[in-house]
Amino acid sequence: MDVARPRDEVFAFFSEAENLGRITPPELGFRIHTPLPIAMASGTLIEYTLTLYGVPIRWRTRIATWGPPDVFVDEQISGPYKTWVHTHRFSDIPGGTRIDDQVVYELPFGVLGTIVAPLVRRQIARIFAFREKEVRRLLGGEA
Image 1: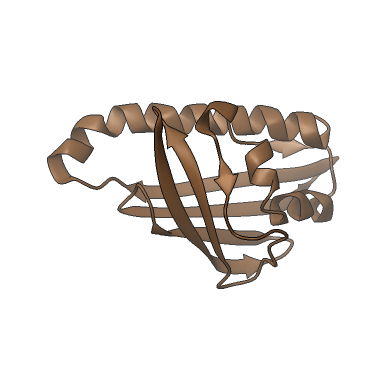
Image 2: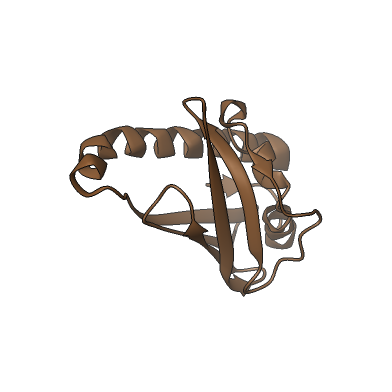
């Protein structure tokens, strides 16, 4: 997505872990358990919960790569996925910043994971659509 804000400001917004709650759909009940503010760096651990279909899910991630103001990567240490690696890239464009997200994930539970994969894919797409709308609202629209 493109936003009409300088890259340093956009990266700073994403650097504040508490903003993740602001760009997560409210029905997921996102809650950070790690004391705030969190000093972000390679190796930082963040613990939080989400509520999915009424079931609380504990999730622990580690910042695997920290390269302000260009990139950071968070990886699931424990949580609902077998694998979750989320790369956030930020680049300058005329009038603002481009935000590129890449999520690589693998579901647990073998065949059962394969059966629910379409539902999970739709849920992730819905979460990122909400996220895009909220980021544009909070950071001032499209570049």
